[in-house]
Amino acid sequence: QSIASGPVKCIDTKSIYGSGANANNSNDNNADRNWIATASLDHTLHIHQFDSKKNEFSLHGTCSREGRSSYVSSICFAKGSNKKDTLATGDADGTVCIWDPNTVAETAVATKRLKGEGKARGTSAKIIRPTIVMESAHQQEVSGLTWSNADPNDTKHLVTGSWDHSLKLWDVDRQDCLLTLNGSRVVTCLDSSYHSEGVV
Image (cartoon, rainbow, N blue to C red; front, side, top):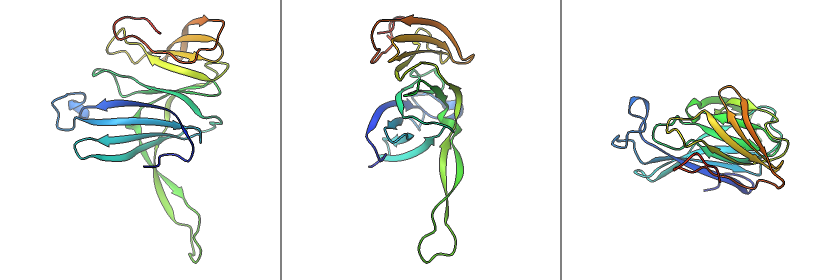
């Protein structure tokens, strides 16, 4: 299934178990659903849903930020059964955004008038807006993000890496950089360990 008009730059997934009071309960009847976030060089960012029980793949929502002028270069869901449904993204211009996939909303979209029709047809799109936008988080492209795994409930601390040679630890709730580590080379990728507080 075609999901973008340009090459996919990055992708990440998260398994979803139930919703509401039964969220993240592996015994819930809604288990085995997966969110799949894809970012493309055509500047689009989509969250898809795959239901393995029904073998159905559908668009959950399109992530949209006003004023975005660059493509999304890195994405990372907060993993873990106790963590909130949160997606972090980094842009080529150094911006970092936080998204809640559950905030999807139907938005009216106007389409072009077809030949022979008197009025333009209207349709709707499932749009997700960012909950947090940290502009100029880095001076160059954000090449990697990872959530802290030290605390299984933590969706507050985020580590980012960039072409500007730096690694940064963020308190995303306060939009505050807690620590900056500067190196002599470009950071091309990163990940956190599930067995320690280390970052690779």
